[in-house]
Amino acid sequence: MTFVEVLIKNSSDIWEQYLEHPFTNGVVDGTMDAEKFKNYIIEDSIYLNAYARAFAGGMYNSTRREDLQFFYKSLNFIEEGEGSTRVYYLKKYNLTDEWIDQQEPKPENKEYIDFMLGVAKDGTALETWMAILPCIFSYAYIFRELTKSAQVDESNPYKRFLDDYISENYHNYCVECGKYVNKLTSQINMTPEYKDKLSNIFRKSSLCELEFWNMANRK
Ligand SMILES: Cc1ncc(CO)c(N)n1
Image 1 (tube, rainbow, N blue to C red):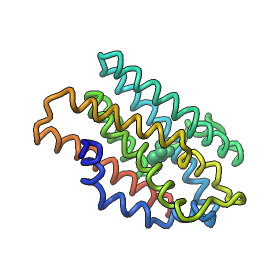
Image 2 (image 1 turned 90 degrees about the vertical axis):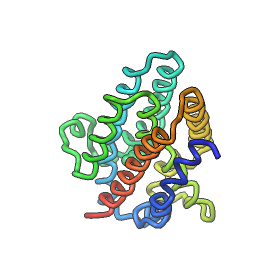
Image 3 (image 1 turned 180 degrees about the horizontal axis):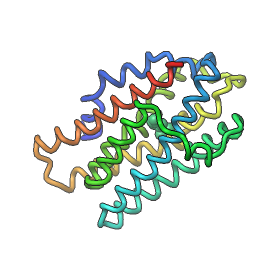
Image 4 (image 1 turned 180 degrees about the vertical axis):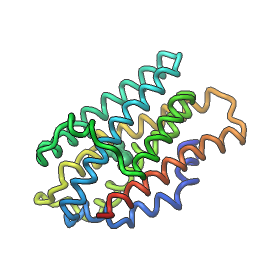
């Protein structure tokens, strides 16, 4: 088993809950309440700004060119994909980035942001990847799994959102991230204690993801 596979296995009890969540299922079948989805997009726009700062923290703490490059290549990929989808929905709701900048995140979002930025501020590149990987991987996992048996309807208002995560492009990016992180772990001395430390960071972010869905599903 690769280290990335171990990480996911150690958080599988949480990951299983993503697939049964009323919010993720409501988005996939298009029945999600429009107001809830709008509020989700607002929180997620705040989150993605903090996410970019986490990458910046990871970059600041990286001294190897490959590590620096992988952070900015990833950030660019996210900005062009999900970032522009958020802008599309914000426009639809007549909201602007300037307005988003003024908003305070809800408590669940704030907890996730604070955790991620804390790891990125003081951690190594690898530790920072532990905090940001559940975000990247879980969306591919959730939306690929949930659309396996049923295609996304053309009339689904959330199709543009879903298409980002079920695309081949996003899948390939996840594979690339996995390879890169596995390579990082093969270059250092991974004691059992350190493996646990890394796995716990990944697990905490996985839990924050679940709380984010719970938050989104509350009015
Ligand atoms: C909270 C959250 N987690 C994961 C993703 C996917 O990158 C996202 N856009 N937002």
